[in-house]
Image 1 (tube, one colour):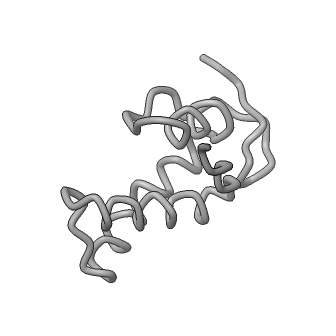
Image 2 (cartoon, one colour; image 1 turned 45 degrees about the horizontal axis):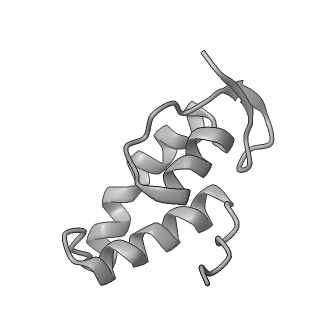
Length: 82
């Protein structure tokens, strides 16, 4: 069990663990988001997908979903790669 200082709620809690998202977003969630906030996002994610009519299999829609995920979890946007 890894304890993190959650970027979203500010509490010291058990971390989200392996979330299965690629790249810097997945790494940031695993390092900086608690399990409670991650579960809240998982419950919200389906509503977001339905509200915006997102198709996560499509790259553009997946990027939009990742952007909303970052906002919800209060994770800063990564610096652009050069």
